[in-house]
Amino acid sequence: MVRFKHFVAASAALATLGTLAACAPDSGAKNGANGGGVFTTVDANNPITPGAPMNPYSPNGNTFLSYNSMRLGFEKKNPMDANDAFPGLAKSWEIKGDTLVAHMQPDAKWSDGKPVTVEDIKMSMAIALTQGTASVGSGQLSEGLNVASVTAVGKHDIEFKQAAGTNNANFAKQILGQSIVPKSVYGHLVPADIWDTIAASQQVDASQAKAAQAAVDKLNETGKAIAAFAPKKDVSAGPFVVKRVNPGSAILVRNKYFYDLGKIAPSQVVIRHYSGNEQIWGFMKNGDLDAAPFTAIPTNVLNQILAKGYKRAD
Image (cartoon, rainbow, N blue to C red; front, side):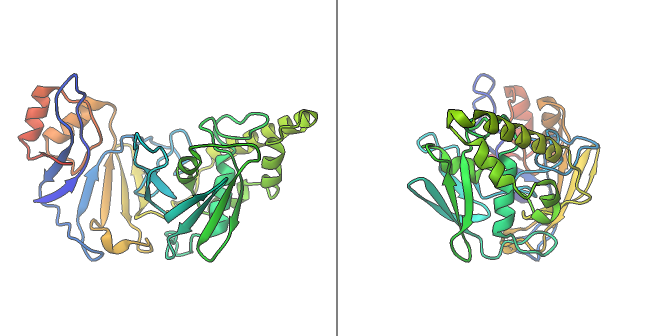
C-alpha cells in the first residue's frame, strides 16, 4: 500500500472528520528521484477545462499549483500570521522595513533546463500588477499587491520594495503568493517600459491623476493580453510539467530539472476532472484517488470512503 497524506475534510455540519490520508492500491511509487508510479488526485482550485491554455493568468487555465505552477512561497493560512508560508522558489525571506528580501533556491530551473532568474521574478511581479483590478494611485491588484520595484541584491537574493506611502502588513503574503513564469515564454507580452507604467500608476499627486489613469488603463490592457495567451507547451519550475490535457484529466510528468527532485517520488501525476463534490466522493468510493482536497462529505458517504482504506491524518 502506498500512503499519501492529503486533506479530505468534511463540513462540520455533515461529518466530524478532520483530515484523511489515502491508502490507495500500490502504484509502485517509491521514495527518491529514481522512484516511479502514478499519483492520482483532483485539484481543488482548478478542475480541468478542455481547450483552456496552460497559463496561470487565464481564468480557466490548465495549471496546477505546486505541481507545475510555482510561487515564491505557499501560504500556511496561519490565523495568527497571514505572512506565514512554506518555502517555494524562495527558500527563505525576511522583511526589512518597507522591503522583503527573498533568498532564492540556488538550483531552481525551468523544465527546459534554463535557470530561474531575477528577470523571471521581476517580470512575473510586473505581470501580477496587470491582473485583477488596478486603480488610480495604486496600480495594484484588488488583493493589495503594491510592489514598486524588484532588484537583485546578491547572487540568489532579490529585494521587493513597497510603493511609496504604503504600509502593507500583508506585503510578504502578497509577494510570495504571485505566480512565477518564465520570461522566455511570457516576455514578448510585457512592454519594455512596464515598470515606468507601474510607477506612473502609483502616483498619488492629484496633478498627475490623468497620467495615472492612462497608466492604469495600459496595465489593464496588457493584463488582458497576458490572460488570453496560450503557450505552445508548459514550461514549469515545479516538480512536474504538463504533458497533455484531455477533457477528463491532465497528465503531468516529473520535471528532471526540479531543484528538489530527490524528494519527488511519483514519475507521473494524473489530475482528474470533476464537476462537484459528488464526483470526488465517487472517485474515492472506487479507490481511484491517492489524494483529494478538502471536501464536504455526509457521514454515510464518509463511512463508505473510510472502508476503502482512507485514513485520518494530521
